[in-house]
Length: 319
Image 1: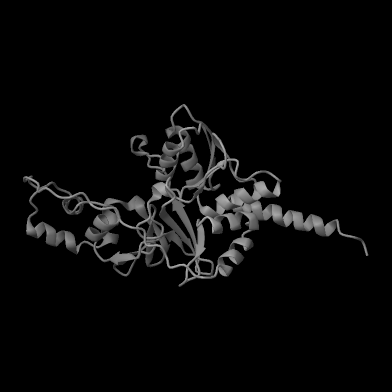
Image 2: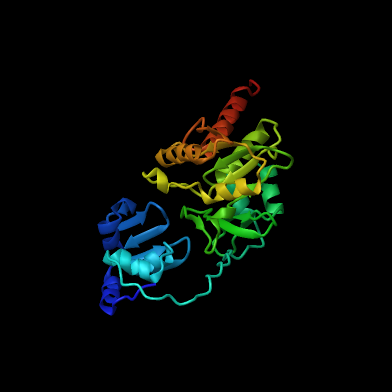
């Protein structure tokens, strides 16, 4: 650890997040509206009127210093140095206990699941897949906002992650505070299987399972994993990393030798798929699969449902 001059700390505390990002990390800024920005890494983190708020985690402050510590995980020293752009003289560090893992703050469940079931049925998800998720505790409805909560579990079946998605008009989606991305929403294969299908989000995963059901296939025959979102990989190949959920799942299932990406057909999705293909060791066969219709797997499912309905209507009895 280093000694930090008090005047340097004072100057660091004055720096607001927008100014810091404009000067140090302009590539992170995404303009949402005239006076509002988000970040590429965390699209639920909004910056407006001199303040920032990370809605998916329920935290917000003013300064860039708080952002670097609470969002980026910087130490206090590293955060001050990042803002000041200089190094501080070193001193002998004090022994500290390692930080404890944060517990997931799961939204309080509602006794009813009607809103969530209605929402997901509207997205085309079939009853068989929905029933499985509800019965195994992978899906529930939140009491306060009636959002869909997709639960990720570890190998012992302990809930470690929750993706929250609004069922109303707000369009909100994000992770519950304390969620561990290593254990994102997934449905393991029911029997021996060496293939892993990966998706950006839980709805696309459930859409893929529903498409299998519609074809009369066993939708539990493969491993299914949601990555909990993707981001555009960094330009420097040395700085690129596999998604945390994918790394953990492959570690827990060493029998897997084939990975198939089913990411969105947009710039971020295509770049993430190519990055995964390059980063995975040669022992894995990696295939990149783009949606047949629309932007994502759910678009493909809704297209097939619509085409089937139109065909049934045209094939109906003549009057």
